[in-house]
Image (cartoon, rainbow, N blue to C red; front, side, top):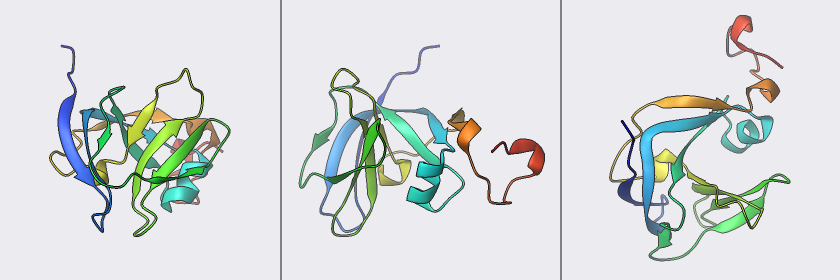
Length: 132
């Protein structure tokens, strides 16, 4: 069965940023890279894929921080809420969104781990599941 994107609305904590987009909520991406760990303060960051060309900001747009040589992170400059991650390469339309910014639906399940070889578990996970 092919999963179809779902139209969602959402925004940041303070309300400055509001958006609508078609998002693939059937599963999420769980990134364990050290950049995502530092950005979230957690062992991993969970995101969901946004269908290319469907993200529309209804109020203010996020400010961006280039966090690596491959992508930038969009956030609210007022409240700090994480909104999106966007690839830097012009030919790459890769966009992901924090499920906590989605208001109209919730993530069904996380099923894809990314950058697991570079994760640093900080003693949180059992040694057999953590590779440095």
